[in-house]
Image 1 (cartoon, rainbow, N blue to C red):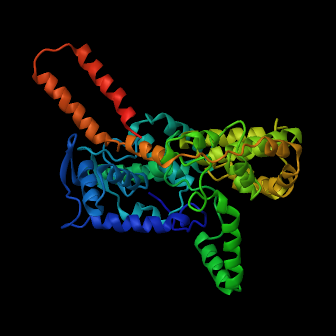
Image 2 (tube, rainbow, N blue to C red):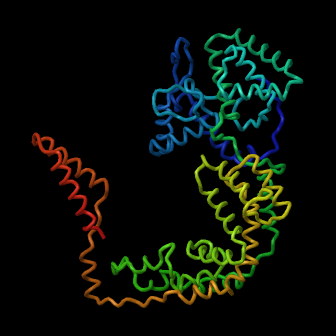
Image 3 (cartoon, helix red, strand yellow):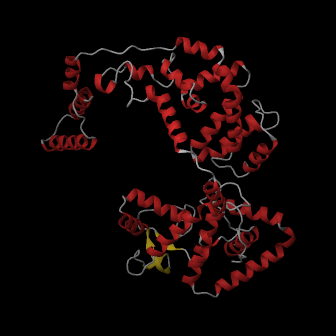
Length: 477
């Protein structure tokens, strides 16, 4: 495979270089002949593959080495497969680690991601042309589509690509069959990692390319912090005192809960008054909205009140855009690309139904990032809108009739007065809850006893178990 030694100056590898180096150290340790994962010659169809390892051996080794359970070990092994340090010999389409007898091999260091080889279209075209020769035109659907696109785009040098593919195919046929199979699996695993099939999340996908090394940025930031003049201790202590004084009444460790602490009194009024979307919030809750704009947005009820204010000012699209960006950050990875495109069409595109006003530089960064969408692709635009709302809309909201009306309707609960006898009685009623494991064991023992006693009516058994489960919550506090 033809790969030129050219450094990639993008964001593709550098932010995770530390992670890759740690992963490589683990892989090297796994290949140790004495303490590593045991490997042996395995038969694959009619070919004998040397130094093959099984998925269950990999999971067992990782679990023993790092003292973790099998699920965590499997997740760590899957990460190694996704980054191409271990490749499957059977199921090449799914880069996951199966904890069974599926066969894997360690990838040669030449193909490790930390080598930072640029993934060029010419190399991929040669690989597809070589597979097309070997398979006699029977490529997979996505490979055939990529092959056609590359043929159309690189038509001016397609003769060179085909010639290189034929030479590599001829050289491969001269190898022994086990070596040929191993190299084919290695090469296929490399391209599945770097050119994954549609709908597959690539482990190499890391967002926009940068012309500046983020590690160098961190060094510069640290040097600037060292050179920055230090704040006087009196000023910093004064800031801590101010913060404590502001939040004192809102800290359950420093101030009692109103109307009462539900954990002590068994009265759930406090929880009902502070539900996320309660109609009339408490005065203390409304007071927190005045502390900072972040406090207002972190409260669902406060955000709803702020949304009503923005709607009256015909600028509700700003908050809607901010919420959509938060949903993109914390949503499922499978819907990430679709959500990013939908946000662009709704808020950023020309003639968008809820168009937001951001500067040209931020728009340029955002549009460029949307060509390779990721969770934080809209960070620049979201920060711009956040600061716009904080500096402009937030101050006017605190002076608006909407906030004053909410403040007027806010509830000020009075403290509940429970006698010592009532609190003592509540404490006596509380019982520690049984562990779910113990409950499951008791249920299994009950089923075993019923099964051993002979034929029984299954309807009666299920009825008794249902009654038992119904009575258990009443004993819990």
